[in-house]
Length: 264
Image (cartoon, rainbow, N blue to C red):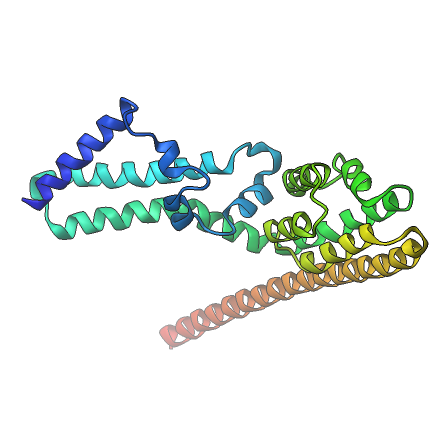
């Protein structure tokens, strides 16, 4: 009885969506409660980190994830309609949830594989920004740096600059950028950048030297991590070669012993 009611409710709900009686934008908008519950905190960052400016609206991509998960759930329910049970409904919901999560898990795997590369983007961008700050104020330098900035940072930079130009002189635009792009030391460097923008002209040189040292230290860390990653890759390949060589030698030895025993 309850299952039949569920099926009817799903069909009615789908008809209302098709006829635009129910707005999915309101349900899954960027500020809706349902989106805040379902959406992972680092989803936008991971999506932009992988695809850059090719992603115009992360929320639209998220909506497609939700739609795919719901459609798979409904399709499985109808597939087992003749022998529907609570267990099959639960299984359909679980499979639909896994389909919904699959893109996020794929993005997490990609991020882990490219972690060192993504972390290295910030110090090299800040080095470019440092050169501009020698000649311009921090907000102007930020605006001029957009064209040469890594693709992953461009959307966040545009939002940060827009807030600064609209009159927000607090640290919030800088901190929100650091939260949106949680790469290594982003919080600390954004605080330094904000303080550099607040500094008096007489103290600018001293603050810029301190900022430059921090950027150079970050670059050194990035190079070290890159070297360690390459070293780890080489060690893994060497280990695999040794295991394969040892395994092949063992197999050949066993075959030789077997042939020797067979001929005796």
